Image 1 (tube, rainbow, N blue to C red):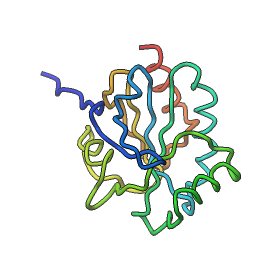
Image 2 (image 1 turned 90 degrees about the vertical axis):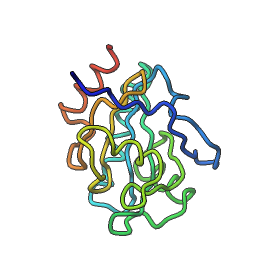
Image 3 (image 1 turned 135 degrees about the horizontal axis):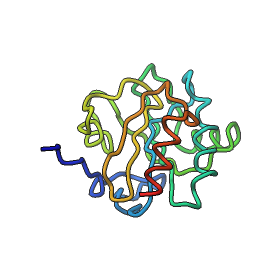
Image 4 (image 1 turned 180 degrees about the horizontal axis):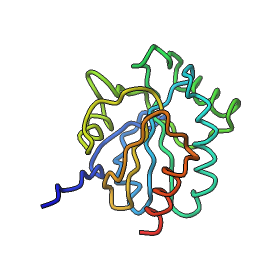
Length: 162
């Protein structure tokens, strides 16, 4: 018997205005949830994440960025500063949320996401979770997996076609 897929639709997060949002508010869309940081060796992935948003956004895909300062103190800025940096440096305009903890005393969405197989803590900035249209976790991609990697883009395209 296969394990039941983890569904994140009821997970509550706080958007950039401090308002509570359920991940289920994006039902019917494919999501890529990423813990982001502005002073990381992987920060350049902001451009690739925006390219994914530009490429697949009209087909029902959204990148959701969750700033996180858990790894090496690489996201010390305030949310408005982070948004300005992402926009001016990388042209990134996908939704950013309030800062969260992805390690240690985790906060949502990571309290739930890290239970998905393969379960375990987020290891570093720019770890990615692919969420299907029905809210189930479809995949987890480590920081070194670039946004334009064939592995990730194929998974996004399959999720959009499902």
